[in-house]
Image (cartoon, rainbow, N blue to C red; front, top):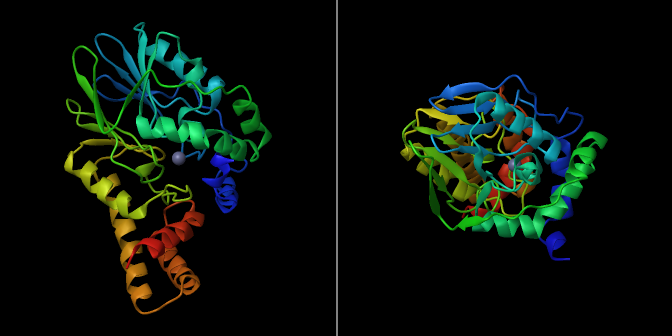
Length: 306
Ligand SMILES: [Zn+2]
């Protein structure tokens, strides 16, 4: 099967380690305004819940990410209703992972879904496999994902798209693979705000478990996001911050890449790099969560550096 070939078994075990025993329900009543016309339903640092964006323009609403499964998406739509009576005209998704996009079917039929083309293809190729993997983690997650039917985008774009909400615009970017093949970034020039998806996570070690993950691209993409000079950064997971959230992620990846390169050039084996560098990283990043992901960052860079 094509999707399984693209998603190695080893990956399944590591991802499962991330999502164990956490309550996967998006909480209502915590939504807060983070910039003019922009609201976020916070993740509360629960791995299986992302930060979800609600952008309210003159002519309608753009939602960023859905929560895991249609039940969570209903909670998101309920939060939108508390803010505005305007219709949810657009939905976009930062990447195909279940807690980010697999609630799309709950959105009204009139909502226009916009995805990068690469993300649509990735969802078709790997969506079933990742859903199965997440469902195996806990009965709660399996229940949320059971009713999922993939809803395909109405509009796709290759590198960039612009959504006009009437009184301001929203830019959507796809810069290639980093966390997944179809990562998307949402930038609001007027508010100088960016949604980073799981390419930008705050005080969590970044996850390179996907068969399309690329540490080398990831560093370049973070630089491009910094060049947008955002004042507000909404990470895929973790607290909202400023451009420093992006910089911290880039500096972490550069640190790992450079150490891996140094050791590899001295002839150190992958296993020895892992056992030496992993504790070094943990000591340097004491307040970051999910250190089980350090190893696959090391592996990813070991495979790509000269
Ligand atoms: Zn993800």
